[in-house]
Image (cartoon, rainbow, N blue to C red; front, side, top):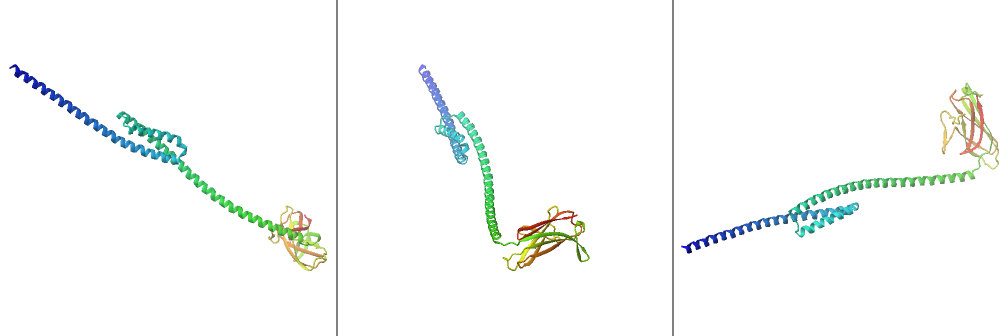
Length: 298
């Protein structure tokens, strides 16, 4: 009887031991499966993190090439990214470390966005500067063209001045000794001399040209210029003569025979258009003033 009880007790003990062993194996199996699942999860997170960090490093490299001003900050970011990649490669992090890396990744992403905004701002400013440079370059081209045109015009003007000076040096001007200006009013068709300004309808200018035996018979042109008390040109029937920028009252043509000659010509003005004062008669040949005289109107 005792032998049977002993065998029965051994069986119970053996059964309990087998149950404990099975329990340990089952627990170890579930622990192993859970660890493997967590390791697989970490491996997947590692791959995603490596991809994100690689893309971020590529973005940082591109931004670094475009924006040298942020080079120091980019170098720091590259160093931190490399440290993270090294840590991920060694699988020496936990779930808590992974969360820390994700926070760091978000911080770097925010910094990357900031750098992208700065880069876009710099590119926009560069575009504006390029447009301004193109406008300035076009204006410079226009200024160069204008400067060239002005230089050509100045050169042409200098040549004309030299030609005129040469002409003036060689020209034999008329010799004039006496000039006179007077006012006339009309009585019917006959002019009557007067010095009353309000009644004058014509101003007459006369000049005496002296004898010059060195001059052969030739056609000559002189210009009469009447100036009022305000030194304004008196017009002939509201008309003036303009020659090379000089304004005259009357153009007079005549034939000079080399002997003393008196030349007279008049300008017509509206009655009552003159005011009292001192009037001037200037006589020009070409652009040179030969003689001048003054006369009074009351």
